[in-house]
Image 1 (cartoon, rainbow over the protein chains, first blue to last red):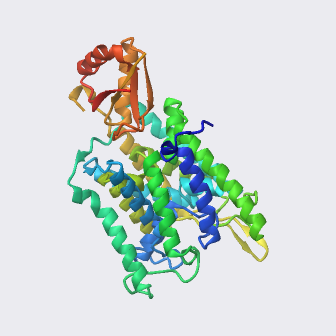
Image 2: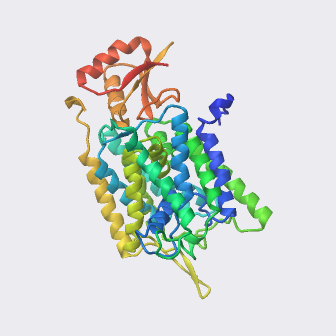
Image 3: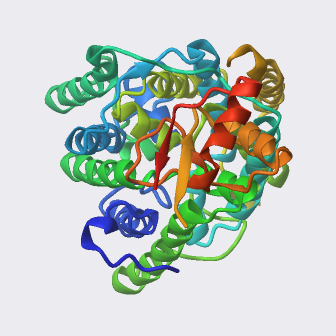
Length: 379
Length: 72
């Protein structure tokens, strides 16, 4: 692994971002976030949909400050380094719908690519199945990129347009913090289940800002990492992903040793918020990976781009939040494995979730074949 | 040897350009966008600066959009 020597360059290194996420995510678990879920963009956006009352699954409602921090940290870095570039207009409706299905795929697996990596570093072998599915989805996405797939060019937009998402998220979080939600008043906040498990709000926000800041500088992207490795044989971003997993693994072992808690055990079954319906772990992430490549990056990267003023990524983010709402309104999300009377019951998606994954894959194929560059026509 | 990179609107543009360059015998490589350059796309096409005229001929002939060319 190449070491960066210039101190200024460290901030632009995906490896440094990966190491920092690998340290901070398990710390967030120690401080209250759900297991192997220090950071999960999909789970957290689903929780935010719940906090806004867009779905009424009472156990997954919380306005996650990490997500707000990701966007604001990226905005801050973009402002400081003059990379703030408001832009929009590249197939917004297509992107919104890709966001919906990316979320459905992620919730059938029970996590975004970030959580898949964190689950792997906690010993959850289902993450291997999920990451194989993700890579397969990325490979299908690359097939479309090679035959000239593009959602079209974004146009420069006014500053206000790029500020909408960062400002609205910041205001909503402020309101959420001030109102201290009571059932049904402005926001919802879980009193049990994963939504009730969270690190202190300010800590989550600061961690989010730090990660957002660094990821904007380093272009950290979990999906871009695999895409570039397969497509142009470049491992620049992939090194950051490997650093994340390795660091989080060391952190989990350390935390287990120090606290006596269960931060690491290797198995398929009995893993936190995880199921071992292998086919659906694979297919869920296949759908998510394909949707992420077509939209241009992993869910984290979409937040960082939105922070830079990219209105199209902001639309994808809103699509994912809508997808989180739909997934819980219509019972599309998978159910974790459970122990009932001492015997393990395998979870996974219900029939509706399986159908939704199929529809999502069909939609992605339509998007893939329906958006081909016509270079001769000046595209 | 000095290199230049062509910034593209999207990764598909970059892939198409790479293919066209190779068909026309121009040595080139897709690389991640260098950090000092700001671009909408994470991938750029790198080629020897001496080839810039030939590169421009090919993209203009095939009507491929590009953002700009920068010496690195």
